[in-house]
Length: 68
Image (tube, rainbow, N blue to C red; front, side, top):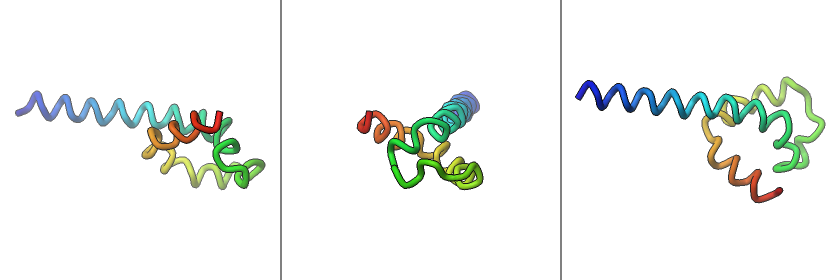
């Protein structure tokens, strides 16, 4: 049981780490391609999008790849 919990926590940490890296790159380069209205928005607005981009990075990655 303990090994299962350790594996699940490590997978959650990996998911979060990938999400943080993805969100930084996505908010810097990709958000304007996915939604044209966000292009040129302030850094404060993009910081509001950061938590959601971390959590939903697989969905946003698919949308970003579809627009490229």
